[in-house]
Structures are given as structure tokens and as C-alpha cells.
Image 1: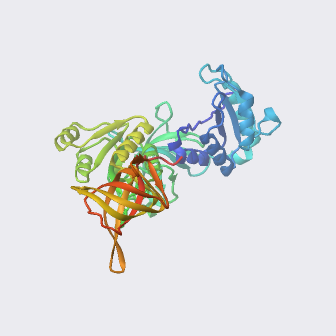
Image 2 (image 1 turned 60 degrees about the vertical axis):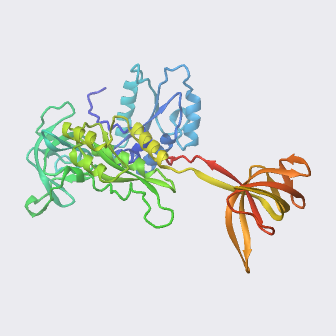
Image 3 (image 1 turned 180 degrees about the vertical axis):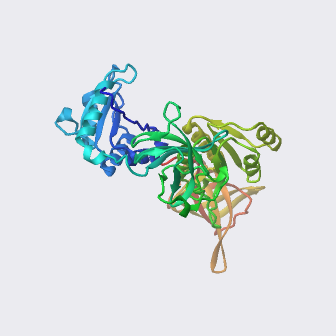
Length: 462
């Protein structure tokens, strides 16, 4: 409102972008906690509150959607209080502004409040513009025409064109050009300003600390790496939940991921980490930035079952033809949870049903009445529990001193006297119509159980 310049770092609200929200808190001076007046405090809201408190950031609460008929500000304030945030409306110290982003209401009040909080915390957020620049990489990608490009928020010092660039004591290139948020070329960038930098030899990783070194010649030059390797800090082992031991091996869906920017790739890998199941899992066999190319299709073809996911990218014509010829599926998405839902659906298709056995009882074969092919009618005495119509049985037989399982069968019907019954209990005698390949003998022990097949589902940890 008074001509002051404010840089906003907008982090996505979707649960997949937890790391992005944490990174945003690390580079920000002030946080704006946006809470919907109708939805109230959500799990992500509580997570952001924890992040703000951990980063010790001064913050403002913006209660959005105040114009909606179902808005309930008092309920939201109560929920915030339960989450450890007491606003000035309830006698606390955290400023709260009611806004409607849709109608543009309260935005000036919010900006004025942010500037007021900045003045109150000026000692903590003041930066020195007269030093070598240092900042944080907040986005990174490889542009087809411009090469490796990164958006950096300068946090101290002034960054100038032709300045050398260093990350982790390695020489990453030189500032060839800089563009501001409007895409216009600039020659110098003061603290607090985000800028798109061209001139990187290799695309840096999101979250990297970039600085202008004192002696660029003394730095080790970063080794060039392929686009598919960019973002290698999000290692495949993190998103790899394949189990290699002999017992209980997992069925694995192999995945190739190509994304537009590192933030998206990071979020997708983070969501795959949350898929936990003892029988199936995801293994990221290849990942990178840029369009889907032929080598991505080859990687999927050589590791079935596999799928190639493109997020905000396209597949080259050659890759599309190769995928068609080799029967490899390329799925393109612009919404992250739709991509994750597709992966979960594929995992569910790989998931075998779970068979649950519930013990019912035991019976001893006392007499053989009739023998047919795969069917017998026998007399039994129930030793414990019950014998029920439709139950399954395991036939146990003594051979010497040891008892051995001889086979499995089914109880087709149970009869007491001349009457068909559903169950017969311990101490009773009954006739059993048994269906199974193993021929029963007098003295055999029948282990009776109920078998239920349950469809298991893959779920993402929330």
C-alpha cells in the first residue's frame, strides 16, 4: 500500500508438497497462514503451524472465503486456538485478517498487516545489500532453449550479471542473464527479490544454497550430469519399497517419472514413499526432468510391469511411436493426486487377495458309511468347537508316532439322525458329507475352519 516491495512464496496446499512448505518457511521472513472460513483447520493447516513454530517465524493468519454463506469464523478461531494459535481477535498476539481472495476483499488490510509485522521484526529480517550475494534455489529445471535454469531468492547481498555462481564449494557457472518476475531482464538483484538465472552449467537442486564466491578460480568445477540424473538427491531407494528377501517377496510396479521441475518430481517421489504395503510396492527405475524420450520407454519395456509417467511434460513423437510398438504405457498428468491414484490402482491390480482362516473345531472320523469319487459320507464325533456346513477341513492322520496332514476338503452337509443341521458342537456325534480327494479313514482327525477371502487395498499414509 505504501510502495513497499514484498515477495510472496506460494507453497501448494496439497499434502504431497510437505517438503515445499518446509523449504518455504526456511527462506521466508514472515509467514501467512491461510485458513478457509468454511473448511476450518485441516491436517495440512496443523502441519504448517508446526513448521512455522519450528522455524520461529512471525506470522499472520488470513481467514479466506469469508464471503461464503457457510463461513463460520468463530469455529475457525476455536480450532486455531486448539492448534496452538491464539489470534488478536481472541486476545492473542497473532494478527488475523479476514479476506475474500475471490472478491478481493481485505487484501489491502492483509498487506498492511504484513508490513506492520515486518516493521516489528525489522532487526531479525534486515539484510546487508553491500556484500557478495547469497540465496536459496526455490525452483530448477532444464529449458529446451535456455539450458539449466533456476529461480533463486536472494537473501543477502546483491547479485549482479556476470557474477560467478557456487554451490557447496563447487563452481556452477556464471550469471549470464537474469529475469525478474515479469520476465524482464535485470542487471542487479537486491535482497528479498526472486530472480530467474541463466548461466548454470548444471541445474542445481531445489533447496541448494547459491552464493557468489570470493575466489571462483579456486573452486572445483561441478561435473556435468544428464538430465535424467538431475534431482538425484531424491534417491531411488527412498521411493523404492521393493523387498528382496526370499520370504514374502513383494510384487513391484516399476515406474519411470519425467517432470517439468524438481519441485514436482520431489513431491511425486515423496508420495510414493507414503505407499506402504507388505505385498506390493513401487520402484522408481528412472527419473528426471524434461519430456518423455525413447530411453524412458526402453527402461519401462525392460522392467515389466512398468509405466512411464509424465508430469506437466509431453512425449516426443519418437517416444510415442516406440511406446506403441513395444506396448509400453505413457501416462500424462497435470494434477499430482491423479497420477498417484493411477499408481495405486495399478498396485491394487497386482495385489493378490488375502485368505483369512478362522478355526472352528476338530472332529474324529468314527465310521465310514459311503464312498464315492471325491465324496464320502462318514460318521464323526466332535472333539472340540464345532463342525459347520460349508466349512473347510484339513485331514490329519497318524503315521507311526507323527501326525501328518493328508489333504484338504469341504463339509458339504451335516446331519444328526435323519435331520440336516447347520452346526454340531463339542461332544455330539453326526454324519458328515465330505468332499475332497483324500479318502478318509477311521481315526482321522478333521481340523475344521472357516475360510474368507478379503480384497486388500493399497493405501497412502496420511
